[in-house]
Length: 230
Image (tube, rainbow, N blue to C red):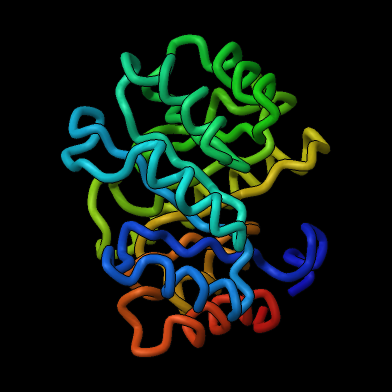
């Protein structure tokens, strides 16, 4: 409880539409927004960097036009896609754009490009990616996304070893004194979410736990309680 209070109070929840029912997408988004979700997480996969295909800028623009929740766009795409994807999703209404550190050799430049478009910048770390580079770009970051599964598909189990990485990144951010969020994505439910928040996470992404629930709104509310239970 003390750690989370020090980093902005109540945890933010970003339901991932990767697990939503396509024919009920708008109604499900309205349901989680009413329950208190803070953002909508949109996984963009190109079938190259990860073995799956998902959404494009048109879907982001449609979700943005509903004007219920800010869009948290996670680009799981190869380097060849970044040059067009970043401006396209910025124009589509993204609040955050996350890129993978594994993709670009010029991460600092990429983060500055995102901010230059009026969007908050973020970097994602795959489970096997060490966070050693972060101190050199923290001034250009609004968020660090720690993947707690290997990206590509929803419904995977949380990797417990990532809890230590959350702690390490939390210490880096605190030491730098920058206002940078820590988001976690993969296998998040009320139990793993509470563990992540206790280590310093401030945003929980949850797909299957929310959209496969009998009551997605109640699932969102249970995640919001994570910050009150520690």
